[in-house]
Length: 383
Image (cartoon, rainbow, N blue to C red; front, top):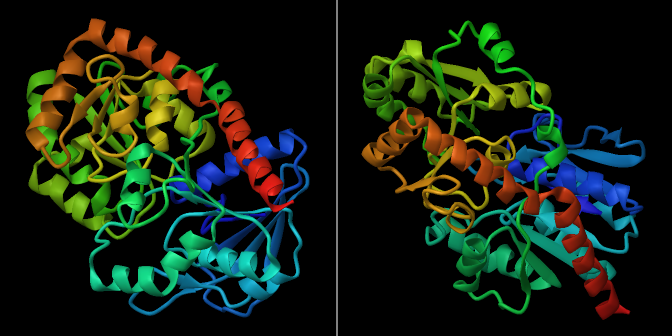
């Protein structure tokens, strides 16, 4: 049983993408899987649960949910009663400070079913009163119930250890990538023609929710310097609105670069692969990331990469070899590294090859085996 706040379609964040690919690999290995997720767009809490089928036989239960007023914590009253009727061998919940994980913890204790919890990141502002209250009232219990805690990076693991989570419980298993999706890349002109981008224009691509923590504002601020040093360039920001899109568009106008910034909206599947093909460089300017899947996608696509020194980027990027690392929020450093890559074809080419080789070790076939081994370990402990 997999519990996750989101599961595509639609896809808002990397956590949903992670669960989607994990489920697909588990099915390929002969494991029966059910997925429980939230339908937050449906504010009628007691409306009938929607059930879908994925990958031929995976049942996906979309439970009506709604945010508690003035919070980002959605509740789904129908979830726990529904879970109590199921009898899985193991429960795997994803994310900290989510109702789905807390519900999984309750059901795990009541039915004595092993719980595995994957941590995709550490909450920003943990020391704020609301975060502390959640940790003391709910979060600590959920973390304590989990038989094993999977962290997507050693940095995220360390953050949870510092608030008292036993290091013996935590296992580091990174995010994964489907390498095969990036083997037969389309021609770059297809994407450029669709967006009316000239073939000789450079493209900086970044993907993520339009929210402040993703740091897209620093890319926009860096763009005037990039245009001056590199020449015709388009910055493509692809991702769903998440309360910061209006500010980013206003910033592009103020910086006099609005004609050089394309707000693409959500991007997935074939379109995303086409965008990677056309991009000259991938930028991840986040103020914080646990483990950006864009990091792996860029490497699998063989694209030069500039990312901030946060989360898994610190562990995967060898600065100057398979990408550049920059200080979060440092516009000058960000623009300097991007200009360097866009103007140095030989450096970009060497980084691209190094990146492809790095990405291979994160293929989902490998990552799923590691997670399945954790399931087996939990089940053996119980029996």
